[in-house]
Amino acid sequence: MIEVQAVAESPQAAARRQAAQIASVPARGHLRLEHVTKRFPGAAIPVLSDITLECRPGEFVVVVGPSGCGKSTLLNVAAGMTAPEAGSVQLDGEPVTAPGPQRAMVFQEHGLFPWLSSRQNVAFGLKMAGVGRRERYRRADEALHWVHLDTSGPKLVHELSGGMRQRVAIARALVMDPSVLLMDEPFASLDAQTRTDMHRHLQELWCQTKKTILFVTHSVGEAVRMADRIIVLHAQPGRIRAQFTVDLPHPRNVDAPALSDLARKVRKEIEDEVNRVNATAEEFWKPQAADDLGGAPGGMGDGI
Image (cartoon, rainbow, N blue to C red; front, side, top):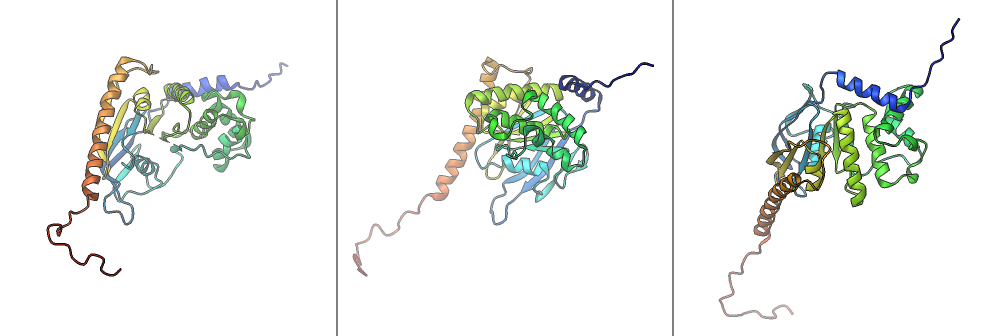
């Protein structure tokens, strides 16, 4: 009688298997915001006004615009973390009314638990979902492989660099197998070299998984390097000012002439919007001219 022994699957083999599974399943991640308006209590002007935005399955959409134009609020509405005053949000035809595992958020701050290892941080959401220990750690190891941290599973947060911490945060989001990845300036706090490395890692990851990604940033260079489509927001209230389709293959060379030309066009839109907002603010704050400067002085020193 021949005894057959089970062989543990390596993270690399598991990642290849997961990639094959991803390629074989129907496309998902069709996110649509229709006529979304959001106003905060006491505000005279809505932060978002009548925004209609569609992210097709597997599309990488980047939102840019001046500070205060509603970029992060747009992500929170898409995530179901805040309800719009008017309009609707749908994911794969289903209404979005609350946070859910099909929409994973990656924030500017990694938000990792310092008392847990990288592996335990990645597996935390699966633990909360009731997934068994062996299965959740298997999936956590797969996710760490996706972000090139195969050997960092046992490390605590303080043992990781800033870029590694953000990669663990991305793995924590991916391990839940969401339809859409929502990213709110996830690399803003990193140094320039680490940020460039993270752009490369994220592009590789997106090419492998083909997740729908809605990404918010202040960096035009970041936008043109990664996006399939760039959305420029109008401010006060937040509306879509312009859209740019980026028909360039991934991964992209940040020094490519085509990217430089596109970056100039996007920056021009943002600069024009900032100038418009500043001009409006100057008019709003301009003091009224005194209407009695032509008369004789009187009452000088009264009350002293």
